[in-house]
Image (cartoon, rainbow, N blue to C red; front, top):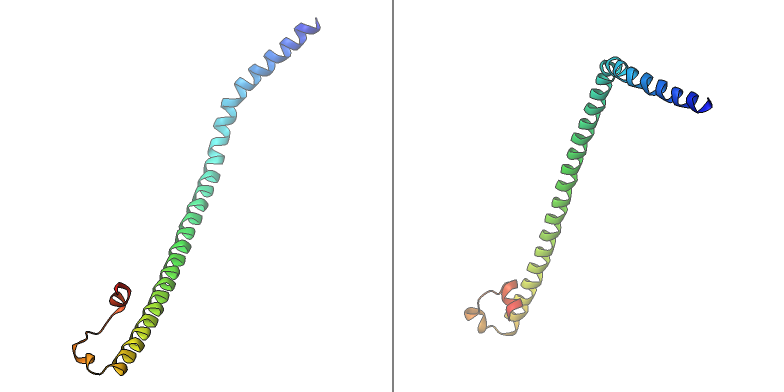
Length: 109
């Protein structure tokens, strides 16, 4: 009869679980619902904060790019002015007919 004893224990355990799960569910849902809501609220706060941080970081990077582009443009203009002065110093007669070159003209020539 040891085989029947194992089967009866298995059936009893299965019936006990089948009865206890709905009871436990009805008991635990009201308790766990506020916990789940608080976890969800914390998650939403973390997401909102990370979005703020990403927006600030993106803005700072865009500012750095704009500053770098402005510096590069200023350097190009300074080089252009030096080239214009050098060209004007070498030939005074061509100064009146020559257009002021810009970076595009220098690159295209």
